[in-house]
Amino acid sequence: MEQSLWAKWCHAYLINSSNFWILPVRGKLSWSWRQTLLLRRLAKDHILYICGNRERFSLWFDPWLQGVSVHALYGQRVIYDTGLGQQVLVKDVIWQGPWCWPLVSGDLLEIQQRMHDIPISSNPYNIYWGSVGHSFSTGRAWHDIRTRSSEVGWYDLVWHPSRILKHAFCLWLDLRGTHRTRDKLLAAGVIQSNQCEFHYGESESLVHLFFQCPYSASIWLAILRMCNISIQCLHWSDEVNWMTGHAKGNNFPAMVRKLAFAAVVYHIWIERNRQIFKNSFLPFQKIVRKVKADVAGKLFMCNKSMENERHHTLCIN
Image: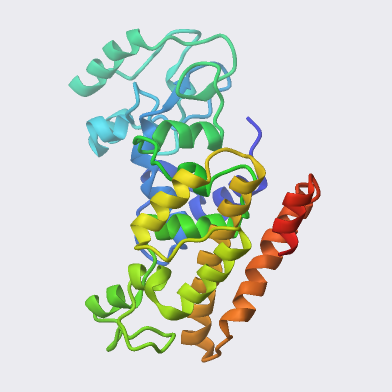
């Protein structure tokens, strides 16, 4: 089984002479390596070991015994009883075909009996994901382990084919309510004031920022006019519902509305952060120009801006 360069590096510098399945989750670990170790319990439910010739599984620590390791089932005592040491492999208890455990204790007798349910293949050993024949891939793993729920109504508003990824991600965070607005930071004791960074005297919340704040409302109304939409700013949830209902499909007007909505949310959030971290302020007209440039650029890349005169007007408005 060919290992990636990253896997070889992990074996050399992180696992060393130990075993991946028993490494402790403590000490000075990187965030990514810590998360990888925390996923072991979940991964064991999907990994399938096929015992064959040229075996390289750890006899004690790999979860090859019906999804569990021998060490997890019987503890350290069974390792001591065999006298085989901790670095022994599964192939070391296979003798000329059948299983051949040293039968020197009750636990080892029980293990030998359990081996009747585990066939030994004449082919080389292998590790599969989920079922025999399916090798591991990040896509298959994500599909199998992710938490599933019903599709939300605004899914196509965010993850449509023409999306600008950073805009879509920012909009997705807002729709899930996970952006750390100042009202949340104040409640967590991180800051002392939740006043809106655009200096209109109100507390900053998701609802205020999109689009009850006069600054963000000016941006959104200007973009709506460019999209030939004549409505007033709504409450955030109503705004999302209206846009979801009026931007369905992949026709040109719907695409413009989706791109414009995500771009406005993204640039307002970026401008809010600029105020906090750089103490720099741009007039709303410059934000409008940034939004228009992003939307027009995406439409040009998709070759959608010149389909007909009406579409051309929308793009250059």
